[in-house]
Each structure stands twice: as C-alpha cells, then as structure tokens.
Length: 286
Image (cartoon, rainbow, N blue to C red; front, side, top):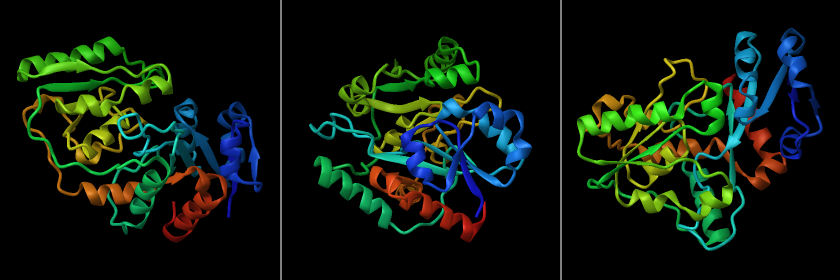
C-alpha cells in the first residue's frame, strides 16, 4: 500500500492517518509533486484546495476530509451541546457525486448514534409542496475567495431570477461567523416556510432535501469549480427554471450512499475510517 502523507500538523488529521504516515510541507508538495507519485495525499478542508489540482494533474491519489454531509445537529434537534459528530472521507474528490446502491446499515448506525447521544430524531421528512420563500444560501467566505466569486453579485443573480420567474420571497441566509451561532440559529426553522433552496455547495442543501425542500444549485464558475455539492445529483442544476422543482424519489438510497462516506469521531480516531476507505480502494481501485 502506498504511504499516506499529510500537510498540517493537525492532531485530527494525524489520528486519521495513523503512525504509518508522514507530515510533508504543503509548499514542497505543490512545487515538487513528482517526488510523491507513490503516495496517497490526505488533505483536510477547502483550505487545502490548491493541493487537489496538483494531485489530479500528476495522477496522485488523494483522500479528502471535511465536515459531514448530514448529522451536524443544531438546537432544532437537541438541547445538548454538540460537537461535530461526523466527518466525510472522499477518495479522489471533494464529495460523493453519484448514487451507488448500498446497504442501510451505516445510515441506521449514524441515526442511532444521534438518538443515543443527543436524543435527536433526525429523520427524512416528507416533501413539502407549499412554502412562501426561496432560501438563498451563498458560498462560504473561503469558497468565494478561491473562485473569486463576488458574494453580492452571486446573490443579486439569484434574486433577479427569483423575482423574474416567481412571486416567492427571496430570503438570504449568510453563513454565521461562529459554529455556535449556526447551531443556535437553526436553518430548519426557515425550512418550514421555504418553497425551494438555492445554494452553491453548502451542506445546507443536503439538509434541505432531508427536510423535504427541493433544491437548486447555482454554480457560476463555468465548470471550473473543484468544490461540489453532494446534493447536486438530486437537485435542479439551473436557476432559470425555478418553477420546475425536482422531487427525487431516491433520497433514501442517496442517504445510504452518503452514510458510507462519513464516519463518527471514534471511527476517525481509532483507525476504522482509514481501514474502511483503503479496503474500498483496494477492492474497487481509485
């Protein structure tokens, strides 16, 4: 098996990689990638976005770690103080983009984890056919910076399309500055009056679909974005058709698949997540 390398002396990343891995300066890797052709790069979050094109250009395999697809509880679900419960682990990409048939074991395990630890009934809701608002979720600050997206321009483009096509109210929900603010200002409360959501890559789009709210993706990077929404496979990909919402029937199959790509804190720390992913790689190839 190839050697795992990582870039930041972060205890979480180091714990995932294990002792049979090596810390490498990110700048060195980006300047001399040919030295690492027999390695598997482990990178965490969009702060390492510049590593991904380097890996792809040089056919270097990578494992991407980031926040979970679903299960990041807010005060809507529980009165308990919540840490990040799950993390996603993706091979040679930033999120899972297809729906592969999976067993429901991992999904059931993760929902049970939330129930047992936080008394949270985190379930998939029936589709809502009404609503008076279209919820606009702009990209995060780091994504705006990476792709040189002007936030106000992005928002204005969406609002113009909403007002041109529909009579629904455009509601902008910008990302809160702190995790505490996000947890105490749950987006699920806004979903109750929402007709559809429009986002770029936010995990809120996954939450939207779980809550029964159809989603639209507005990616105005002309296809240059390495950062992708896991909800895209079940979303309309064009805001020029806001009156034609998509109500996919395979949400549960999709969630079962996503659950195979995210792991709880214990699984990340005790080596299970790495072994699970590398076993998958060995069986299916990168």
